[in-house]
Structures are given as structure tokens and as C-alpha cells.
Length: 297
Image (tube, rainbow, N blue to C red; front, top):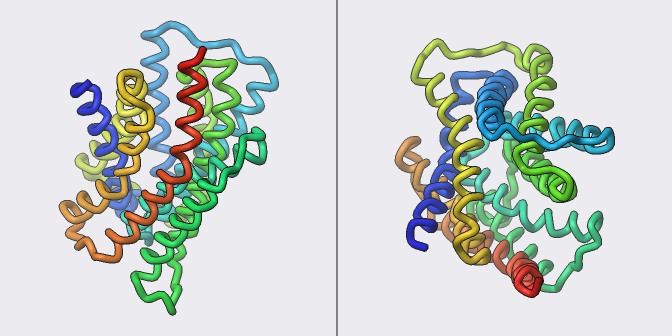
């Protein structure tokens, strides 16, 4: 149990650090090119993994259409908007906004999957929105000046929630590796022409350390960490693991302090507590009900 929690904590640290590493990388690579390069190395990793396992599901035409939509929306636009946003957005604020994705996922599930919308979800949403408002306004409640980059981070959060909903349906007919590989291949192919259309100027680093950071984060964040999480999540209580995953914004704060010398403010801590509390409040009941259903089978 302790070993499982140690590995899950490692995953949270990796995912929380991704905001700071992304902030560093967009200084040396133009955002769409960075998206394309990152997806290229992710695809290489997934192809190697698929070759090792020697098993991919066969998909019908309907599933392939869903995979294509998932690749465009949940992979390319999600990754691209993330890096475009980080050009100007604060990594800690970005992490806090993306932390609310489970709440939006709950609302989308209520609309498209006919899942129940609870009072607890509405209360948690209000709490999380209050926290975001505190962080974005930096405590000056009478003044709301939204950074353009944060708008793109909101797009990242929305596309991530859509990706979860689409993946949930596909996972009934295909294994995660098949879905992840095919959708990332689509995302990579789509990203190539946009790198030349959207990036002006096209920036690429000549520094080997920047390339090492790019490749390392691509493989570790979207490859190894996901595999480690999925492997160890089976050995711990799901509700406790979900609470652990909500610590990503705090990791982003600490890594921002260490690597970007960005001080942690009292209002960021207060806003974080509101947001994480809201996410836990809105998602706990649904997970609890799911756990009862699984245990009764």
C-alpha cells in the first residue's frame, strides 16, 4: 500500500511539474511546433509500447471517426491551447483552472451520458469558481483583468473534459493503449501543417538541454506517469487517490517557486483550497456511488 501511494505521489509531482516545464519550453519553441514535436515523441513511445505488448484492438468505422475527433479535440487542440496559454499565463493559475476539469466532466456526463446532477456538484462548482475568481483577481475582487493566456487554458480544460467523456464511451470497446496511440497519431498528423500556419515566427531551440526537457517531459508526463498511475491505482482506495491527484496545483506552486523563482502568495493558497475543496465536494459522491456499484458485482 505504501509503495502504491509513493508511485501515485510521483505521478502527481510529474503532472504538477508539467505546468512549469511547459512554461520553460514555450520560451524556446513556438507553441504549435512544440505541440507537434511533443506528440511525435509521445507517439514513438506508444508505438514502442504497442510493439512490446503486440496487441491493439480492431476498430470499426464509427469508432475510427470518434478516434479522429478525439485526436483533433482531445489531443491536438488540448496540447496546443495549453502551450499557447502558457506563453503569458501563470503556471500556478493554469494548474488551478485545469484542476476544475472533473467538475465540467460531471456536467458533460449529465448532459450526454444521462448521469445524475447532484446538489453536491452544484455547491462544489460554486466553491471552485469562487477560488478561481480569487486567484485570477489576485484578491482584488473589484477588478477582473483576465490574461489572454488564461482563456486558452480554459480551452485546454474544456477539451480535456470532452476527451474524458469521449474516452469513456470508447473504452467499452477498445483498450486504453489502442485509444491513446491512435488518437495521438491523429493529433500529431493534424499538428504538422498548423505548425507552419499558426507559428509566426517559427521558433526552435538549438540547445540540447531544451530538447532533453522536451523529450523527457513528453515521454514521462504522457507516457510513463500514466502507465504508473493506472498500474498502482488498483491497489488503493479510489476516493483517496482522487484526492491525491488534486494536489497538482500545489506541486505547480512549489515547482514555480524552485524553478521560476515565483513567490507563493496567500491569495493563491486560499484560492487553491477553495478550488480543490470544490472539486472534492462535487466529485466525491459520484465516485463513492461508483465504488459501491463495483463492489456489489
